[in-house]
Image (tube, rainbow, N blue to C red):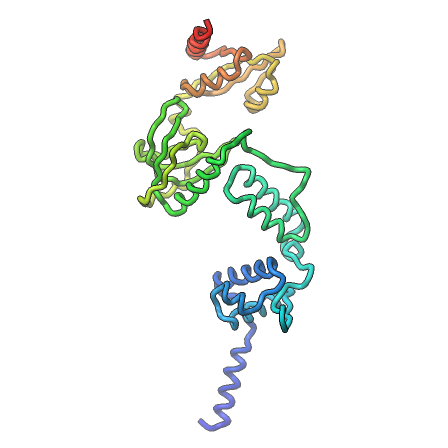
Length: 328
């Protein structure tokens, strides 16, 4: 090949190298997002510092900066001492990606997560709110699902169970069930659910050989073992009562005094409530015959009467008689 041919070949190669950059892999997309967040959280950052934090070459960083600039992210470069790469003054994510309403929704969602005692949610809330150009943590709204005096132990349990679920570690714990019995459990944790003001653990019970739901507040002596499992939660899993549980439930007709009407409407959906002519409230609902049901009904004290079924009336009457005998 003559000299002219070599020059033409080199020119062709240079043209190929000058093609517009494109984002081709998820890893690069993740890195681009990381660069934006790093520049948002620091006034200046050198290409060398970014390369060190993201474990790539400075050439790769400059290539990424070029891609971000083409995408409309206003990144400036300043030479000399104290210089480096930075975002145009006044730039924030809210101007480019989120509307005011979307920002508010994000912050409120994190407030809800924080109120459910989820670990480190407050730190995430502060960081995300700080990315926006103005304070969105509204003073008019405070969300708190926790009970008065909600223990720190529950928050620690959530953090431990999150690790066990993600890494698939078998757990052991002591459990107080609704029948007031204490059992030692070995289980494969599959999912955490927050429902009706409380956290629940969905796990495969190695004793029962079935999926069970455990209320977090009843778990004691939680321990994560080094034993691994492979089970996954079935795609059709639901917290709704099983067909077997529905078949063993009984229809209760309850009469509540109007004096606690507020509590009745708190506890039951309106479709189950009927107001009587004398002001009392009649509630029709399905319960199983177990300790939880009758202890729950006793919590209404003198303001509830079981109308039906007759067997439930007798059970509650006997429990009330035992309570009375304690004070005679």
